Length: 452
Ligand SMILES: *Cc1c(COP(=O)(O)O)cnc(C)c1O
Image (cartoon, rainbow, N blue to C red; front, side, top):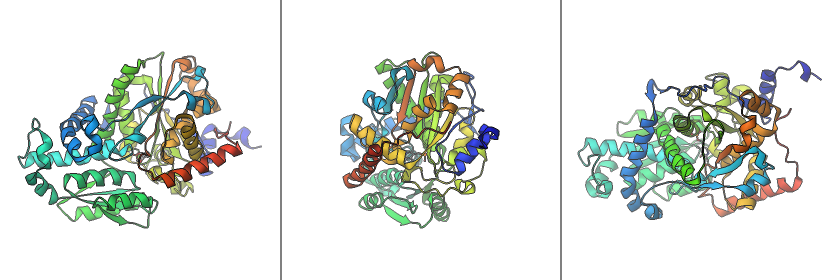
């Protein structure tokens, strides 16, 4: 046995390279009441998240007009917060480990994923900037005028482009096309066919690339640089995206209040966020940190073959390929080889840690959620459910809880799993996912916690 001489760091590296599920914690996390967050040289605060939320509100009447499915909410794109006791039991977690909740972004209208927050925000910000510059509105105007000819003609002169593994393209493409922009989505090879079909049906130009997500982004960026009328949404570098995501924290605060959920030293909040390039989970973690201070502990969930955020925290600038991984996963929303360095820098003092999940576990938890709670999610969105087990059952998790002084507070803890996508998965594709999960459940080899 060599394990006696293996340090925890070496064990983590071995697990990373072998694509074994692992839990890592962030030594750089600050428990100060406030942390300064700088993105691209700019300090950001809750005021910026509020500004993003206000922008969504200004556009709500227009969105209610453009999307019939938003009539009911007056144009607001939001998701429910649900207590999931049956899923908690299915995961084998007792009440002494806290209470399991789901933030149901898998049901977000228009985009069908968490990308409705960041992606749509950036398109709205671009449209608003153009409309303001051209005197079509002031910030006090009724934005439904943007559905009329002068605005449509203005927007039609511009193209909005993005590189995507699928979901970001869906949100940007659908919203850009609805506002009257020309829209181009550069898709990576792992993007699902139905996502391309859905976009083409809305008049979006889908460009397919043979390479991975990073290559699709690079291709889109190059094309946009040559065209002054092309606005490129840069998933690896965008502050607007991050702030759009961060506004979710404000709505969640209201939902927590309505449910009587308290977050303080005696009632810690653990949030489990599926992570691709890192913008979405970083934006949300940032927003929650501004509201709840050090009492929120954000963990990022990544596939064992695509843990780019962990790699970026470990060795800035490296990709998952540098560790012998192949970036192949059924979690297409998370199939990213290199993380956003912007998101990683913002998370350095905020993030509690992260963990990796095998694809089999994604299908198993997708199946469990269907059976226990009747919720339908895509594989990427299942990554959060491993978090509470990782934290409370693995040796690494228990050691961290003890070190951080959280063990005694566990029974009063809230575990919030962010389910990030699924609404538009075609029923046949979903049935396949669920079947795979059911087969794994029958096999019963469900102990997928990290070794040790
Ligand atoms: C994009 C996406 C994420 C993660 O967002 P990033 O900004 O890429 O980290 C998580 N889940 C789903 C379903 C997604 O589409």
